[in-house]
Length: 115
Image (cartoon, rainbow, N blue to C red; front, side, top):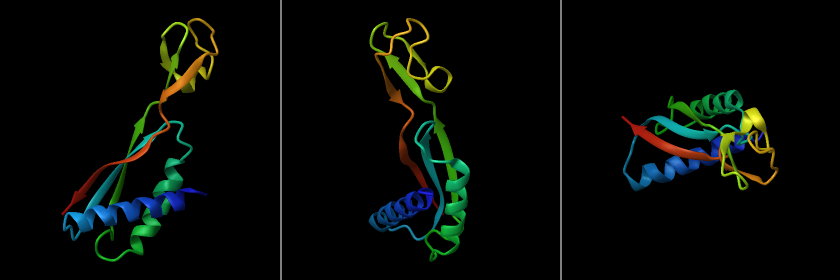
């Protein structure tokens, strides 16, 4: 379960931002999570809830909000964009395998809300 390591990394980043901006209490953290990022939402939420209970005042009880970024693939042959989950690597329009993932494997902090 790499989600726990991901949570520890996010917490470290949030603590750095909090120090830089003189924040004393974080209310919520919003993460953008790509559809094919390899991170399992429910595991991430469980790890987050466990970790923030162990935190000092800054993150104690902070809510984790997740926003999904859809996976989109681009076909180099016909310039078609299509849903990666629905069609995989082969372009549904021209059947070309000359495709690449354009978005959907991201994992980033979008917003930190403070009290």
